[in-house]
Image 1 (cartoon, rainbow, N blue to C red):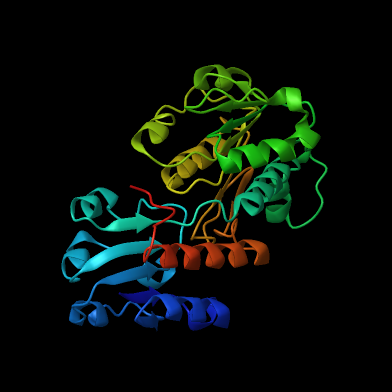
Image 2: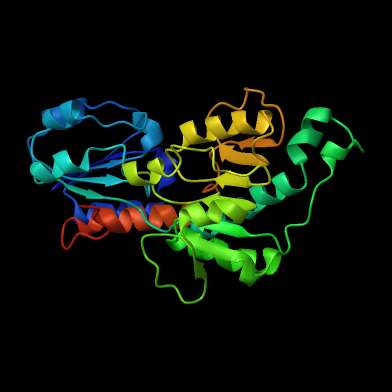
Length: 301
């Protein structure tokens, strides 16, 4: 079986490359979206995709052109950018890289919340100290903090928030309501008292639907979004902040040039981007590739 890996040459260390070479008949690393070698190779094959190389897209039309494709190993935790249902119909395994950045993402959530609490976006735009009332920040301690989505990142975030807001203030909303360490609360009930809301839930029609109607959000609520796929929600919330209908919003964006009024904190998509997370990500990615030759792990179908 052959493998084609779309990534930068130096993303994988020599030991990882040696491991791959011992498991696959052919290992080819491509640092650009050149799919010609895939089309020409009739042998059974695995492809591994860094989304930045392929533009966060791998279409069904492209998949249909690749003969004898056995598996697609994504470098990401999210897999919504590939049609997993279509691949399942064709017998193609899809894998992801789970939980590699849990700690770093949770840490960034805390940083973004603190930025909103201390009104840093206002000071950044002001360019100097300002003693006007709108610049006065607040302590997060003893403020209700609610986590939407209580997977690995949500749990890690809750642990970090214990020392900041106090454990009694932390609630969560999730399909799973069986965590005895924290308080489950219905989403609509959260909106009545929430001051800090963290959106860590996976994107799907049901989770997006939670934010179809933003009119129930209170002016004191500050929202921190690290979940992928909620860009539209973030933009609508930014407009609410500008109109005084929301206390603040923090989110990641590819466009850092846009200017927002009010307590809106925008950062690049760097929540995962730490030395420790990257090392873990590449290790898991290589382990997952190798597993395709024996017993696949981290499958998402």
